[in-house]
Image (tube, rainbow, N blue to C red; front, top):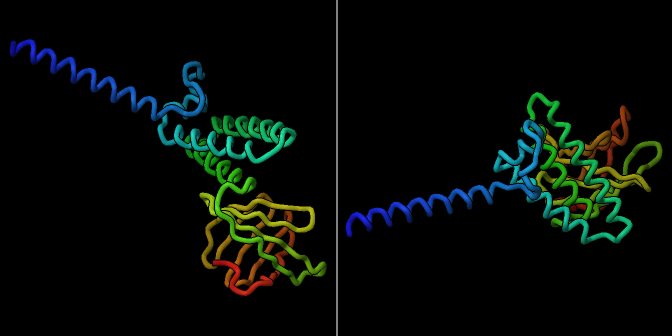
Length: 208
């Protein structure tokens, strides 16, 4: 009887270990199937890394939320854009720090979708008037994404920027634009190799 009891306990223990392993494996899965990914590919890297797999699942959820915000025509455009992003992510295999590159691609894409489709809390828009010859006016909206983002608009032009390191004040950087702000005063660059514009918020205490 004791022997049968010991055997039963061993079987139960093995089943518990198998169930736990299965749960961990499920938790580590990205939003796509890992069964046929190519060895050495970026997808294989995501499948083997639980943190990257979690970022992939998060992005998939945010993408579904974004699709729900748009019409059929915009949905097709967003789908094509997402395919382009996947190609960019997969190009991380060329990077010296493949994992770091992939992690950054996911983090920035999640924040971008959250901002562009208003999926996170918003502050603004806040208007800034500048002292450049054109007397430029910017509308700036801040988003509580991770990392924090903003969308600056000047006429029909717009730029998505991400929070960047700064010795003082708060600085955001985009592709060819930047925004630095402190207590309602802002310095904005708009376009490659263009001079900074000194700008002033039209609403006192607008930024938290």
